[in-house]
Length: 206
Length: 206
Image (tube, rainbow over the protein chains, first blue to last red):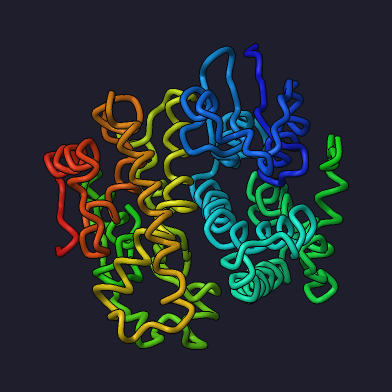
């Protein structure tokens, strides 16, 4: 079996997705910790070797094979597992929610969490301050769409846990750190509890 | 074979991705045209039936099965074709660039194209005007990352055309409509020409 090293920051939801996927499929990961607030993923060495986009997470497969983008890394680790539906349509619907998460969910909900809890509102740039209400509005819309979808479903696709749930759960279950009150979206809140009951579940702290 | 209907707007790069994929794999699509500038994807009917997120494109498979998110629709149509590598790592690297496109590329480059050429700078909201230089900076960074990756490669993954190229090509090849001069990124420019030479290629106009 390959040796996996996750270049990560523990508190990042994108990194957590990969750890949660690995735990659910029973794969061990080594981790190397970076602090993006200190520019540790923007060094010339990081940019030239690990990820030219200067971002975490990056999954290192064996030695010197680097796979950036959290959802791609989750897919790689979960290949052949129960977390990826084999049915063609269910598989595409899983990807649909994973793309939705990266396009619409993460830019809004993860940014507000990061700014409010990990950077601090007083330390934000003018641009970030300007964007706070924009992202608030976008985040509320996204949670509304999720809540509506979950009104008649236990999980996002195929009535069982897939990578779509992992992708969407990572930043949703800590959305209170971005001052979103999940009580407003009760189907989302109940779904978060179902994800936590999945055998093998690990929290973002470990 | 299933009957496919693409709910789309012709000038949208996200919709073009699906048409290009369909052309390259030899699948016929019917299209239904909407104008998002007129709110045609925000009607109660559209939101309740086709896509709760109020977006195009949506691929309708057969009748009443709706698949939003352009990259998920491309994946569905291309399943089993040469556009999706069967090698596990190449497959994950393909997804990596597809997620990169939706997270980093499209929000910057597609937005500027839309605002400058299809909405008109004079008609933008204050928020959109404020975001123009932000998206300019992000778009230039993205094109730089692509140019560096293509310095030693013909295509994004596996030295052949995959869905990663289709996803990234759609808005890149019309980036001049967002006032990006591809002459600054010569590897990207040369790659665009290679994509156009692919057998079965169709332009965004048709």
